[in-house]
Amino acid sequence: MPPLVSVAIPLHRSVRFLPVIFDNIDNLTYPNLEVLVSDRHGLDDAIHRIADRYRGDSRVRILQSDDAIGWVDHYNLLAREANGEFFMWMPHDDSFPAGYLERLIEPMMAHQQVGLCYGDVEPVSLDGIRRQGWRYAGTPGVKSSPPGLFRAMAFYMVHPWVPFRGLVRRSIMINRGLFIEHCRGEFGADVNWVMSMLHAAPLMHVSGVSCVKRFYPESTHRATPIDERAIRSSAGSLARAVRRTGCSPLHARSLAVFAYVYRHLQWLRLVDALPDSLVRRVKSRVQRK
Image (cartoon, rainbow, N blue to C red; front, side):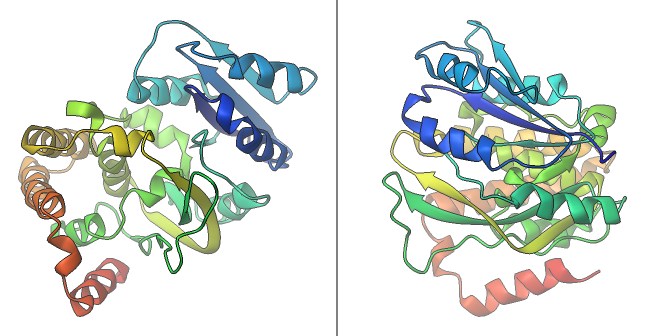
């Protein structure tokens, strides 16, 4: 029997995304699968509609509470509740095509040392209009772990949030306590988790695999306030996350200082001014063994 895979769908005011969620669940055809659907706020009846639709589907587990926990605690709770050897979060407002999961499972099974497998992300507006010419390509996987400081810095510079929509070897998370770290406004919490996985096990990018992310004013990343305190808190959280993997305090602090400076450049919109030649050099640095 193939290994059990757990897919977690956290809900929050999700009624308007029900068609997306239904499509995502229907697209999951992997034979040994559990789907965890969870709502911790109860602000609409989305979870009841999902439960009714999949009442006869033994793969679907419904988790419901009114404890009103934030998204970081919600995501961590789902990782703990899961039973699968492999695990992924599936945001309620993103679209995952049929075959997405299978394309990530294959390399994970073929390469036992890999801790996280991921593809690319295509951005669209809330009404489904694609941003012409835009595609967030996953950074080429780092084949050794932990990475050197400069390679970790390079990885941080090229859409490091993309692997958050990948498939993780859950035992690494559980055994090493690599859950998502809190920070002020949870700014960059997803990136910090990816960076901790980068230091715990090799990451692998799978070309030709992509999901769709919707960008809109109320989405979590847009609603997160960004200021100096948030950037400082996120950098401190990054240091703690990386230290959990056993990396030296000097490596963790140095990476956190770099992240603090780089986030400030992003905040001031100076990153977009970086020359393409520098970006290409950064990507080549990540690719090196």
